Image 1: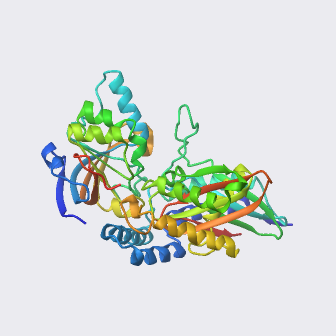
Image 2 (image 1 turned 90 degrees about the horizontal axis):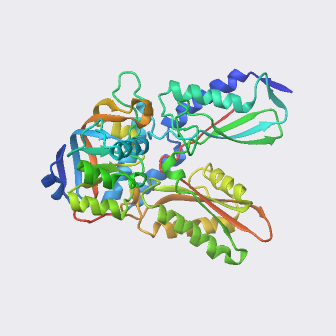
Image 3 (image 1 turned 90 degrees about the vertical axis):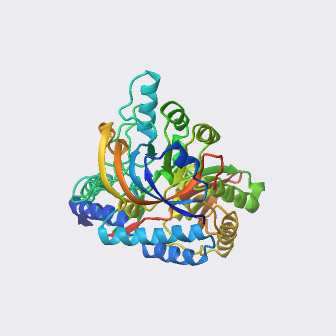
Length: 176
Length: 281
């Protein structure tokens, strides 16, 4: 294992360029959620030249569809979903919206890696199937767009010490 | 003829949904503990620690192990000497699923139309039912909630009989290795061999119900399971697909007679949170 770094989101391009595949990251700060349906809607809005409900410039999207929050909790189980399904959309968000990072599980395609390298974005792996553990690192959750999508709505999350691994860096290096 | 109240089945199923989502079965927990000792990569070992910690949080705090609380897949053995006082078993399962997924704060993951509007049914129904008629007056219900990430890595191929044992090994190993980190390895590999196309797929899913680490009772198939597991673990995919020597915890093969022209093989994977719950009414 490589070095362990504490980072606070949102990240700058310089932060991202300094990350290397294999680095262990403890992430705190603000991130957004989004998965299949939300990505599809974001790209439809881009097609129509309309404003997005969330400014993604410099932000990170965590590919997750959480369980409903039980009483007294901010969120239910919240582990990553398979990132490959977002490959069709991510390059566009990186290029046109300057999305800075993504968190998910599993490999990405070449188009995503190329966009990450060109525009300075990073891809983190969260631990798939550890949703109860990850929920402990989420201290606040608020739906900010596409409420009608239920678990697929876009949430703004405040995370505290979320354990991640740099799976693909902005230099084209990958752990997969 | 024994009569069981419809609502008894509903309440039993409701409780099963919560239990299956939050409680990792002892066989899986044991396999994860064993895997954490076998895994050689430092990162892989760290993932195993997280899986064990996750299972403990899920159990103690009634939190789902994974946010993908899955498609509710039921295997039901219905005795010929038992009936419900009203409705059908399928209706009771759907109602129990609806209540369980609501009351235990599980994620509703089913969309009504697969292709066009993909609108969430908001109840996690309909469920999937595999119903079998058996002697006796009991109803045995097994719930295996199935997450999308691992289900999406399923594979099926109608091999030529001439491809034989080697063909089966290659197809299964390739399917697991190509799945990479997507199905949340270490996985449990379910394999169905024989029958027809759809029966092989059913057998592959049914194979996942066998307690993790229990070999086939047929020594030839047990040997095949061991060989597939060894090859998969030598691939280096590892926990989360990020490298290591424990890519799968177990390989289970179920088989069935087949047509003389055919050799159907299906692969269905379970993630490391290999959930299932069973009850007899």
